[in-house]
Image 1 (cartoon, rainbow, N blue to C red):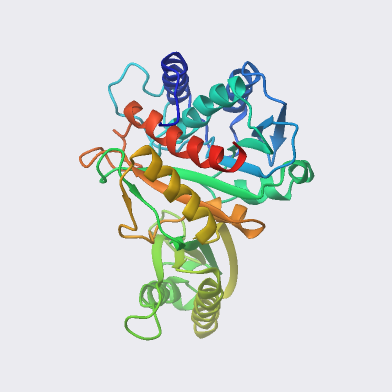
Image 2: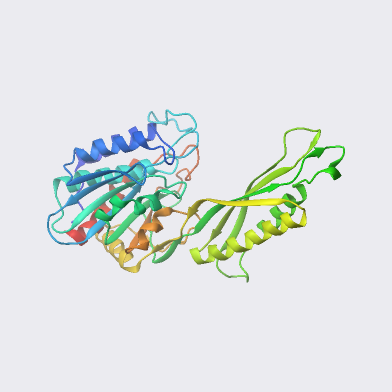
Length: 383
């Protein structure tokens, strides 16, 4: 028997998703989204609703009142700074913002499970539905886990999922080990001295340092061919004022550093920092370095993977290791630092618009599939 989804609850979850899609909010700004979530989950008779976790995070707790494990199911609240060009009636109504990663669908999946667990409590232990803020900038999971209120719902095991365009609808990729890479943004600022453009020798321009550093950063990679992933992608560079009469005195380079593991990131950061410092020293410049949007790698624990695999087998969901790990980052890995965790990637359709494309819209047909997988995995542990 499959994990039962009430058709009326599914209709409510679809409507909920579409309402969220029309009103996206960016990382750290999810006040309205969180309030919408609280309104829905509160109507499902949870044992407890925690708000303000790590910012705007919401946790709905369904407690059996009996000893047993705490199973956490996690989704994300935030949208992206992308213009929504879809033509659906529920397209974004907020200029320059959209749910082009499908977090609205992930929230709707947990909303559907809230209705399910609200009607039928776990037999033992408890289920925590975690609506996490600020996933897109890598700050949310750390903030939630560091919040003192989180200790009361600390899980024994955690699960999450992500929709994946390019995979057949409802087919999944799942594997133990690293599934998402570590990454972080690196800002390198150079400070010198302006001068008249006719007398550049009287100033200290960052131009030579920026030019050489962009090439040097792009060349960073594995120490040996075939080694673990390590790469730096230059994403932005700027210098001086938009003027023909002034030789620039300041500039900056932005790069995204990406490695398979957190340990590899430590090494890549050290090498990139040395390159920036050398470029500054060689050209008589001051340098300031800062890091942003820091994502830890996501590593699936074998025990958690086994539960998801068992759930998908029971639900008839085809799965394989696919081409994991992904180069892209995800901040769910933080939940795995204290207890076993695993993330599964479920297909949104082979020809579905890609994540972060302006015409992307979460496919509603995926909602019951994902809910059955996560719901079954939780029921296996709490009954």
